[in-house]
Image (cartoon, rainbow, N blue to C red):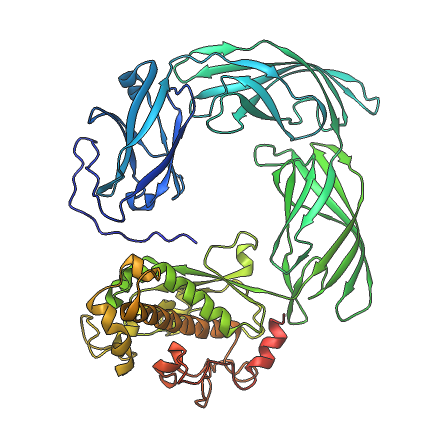
Length: 617
């Protein structure tokens, strides 16, 4: 889980691209490791790892310094991660340093803060001869990633490096032989390793057919400066095999889930529009509640990832008013049979060996991605808990999961990559109520989804259809509205009509941290005594309130309350003890906080039976 936590801007100034002085605070960014290839050239990446690098912002820069003065300032590569920033050495930096070995300091800066200087030895060069000592050989598949050993391997930002294959390809099936002369792009195996590169053995080496390439390999490089180099040519022999299937991950999945198929010799990709891979299934599918059925043969079109991996989505479909697998036509069951890979290039088609294949179609799972908006982080300041965002988020996740523990509900704080977007819902948690009426939360999805047939609901943002019906358009959870439980909410304007009455319990719990905001150490549980208890109590209480509110909004999304009743009934008709789907005014603060003195939160009336139907484990 990664949170872009807002940091306090310090009054530091960077003039003419120079780095500000380190701020010296406890939360200052700290460089732990600097990795750069030797020698370094114009365009060489410099990778920096450390703590607190997110405080530098998206426009972080790297200063190369010697003797207290800055020799060069480098820009951060867009898309660098929060835990590792990458900067590119440019021609100005190379000229300022000059060829040779240099002991320098580097420091990262941005957003008004800077790290301490970190000592680094840079070896600078303006030329880089390329050499080749070992070339790939032996048994391979199409699109295998093969390793080349030598020296002078380049990254894409430093120039261009290719491997030229010259020779003859002879087909195994007696289809004849043909000349090959092709240059394939080479990339470094590791960013800072000049001695090993990788090349993808594409269909440019003789097409898709099984057969043998006999010939030579030679490396050719061209730097950004225009300087070029060639290695000696090395003889090699490569035998290409037909596509193979190895494994399916996971072997049990639910509708909307992404299956990763491992193998070799897969074809495809956006840069190869005339290539594709199919997987043919044939066997028997046994539904969980019915007799076995013959299945296939049926050919699936997976998404190409690499020569060793393709992905298949268990596409959802509605069958008999239930979510089911479009492929198998049932909600649950087991497939047993064979799978066969098929590689296609243009009008050519190559069928690989069939392998035993089994797959379990599990019960529908509702995956929920909980996204915390910038307003959430800003509003935490009003609770005295700005430094406790990560702890509160974990508490929110745990509370929602506890409420739905009996059912197949999966709460995520990171956006899912194992389900397609049409198979998981989004729940946003922000700060102020953008509807301006003091709501704790609002499900702005259109209509009551009886049967939870929409796995993709988005509780957040604005919904024009909902607004056109006369309802509030903005959805999500709005934590700033919780402050109205206080006698001193500290918010501008009049109390909105949707706000709750003040409850002394709120000030009892939050006054200690509103008066003296929790520090990062206290939020992490590193304090002791009464103060530690007060901070922990406030974190737990706020996380529980948010989690309860989120669980309630999800209940609406699932088709509650009164799932077997009126399609326009969204809450319970009568107030119950701890009932999740009671209207907001009927849920006391102590209940939402999950205090031992209050009724535990539960699904009431026919809600458990309904959830057993739509999301059983």
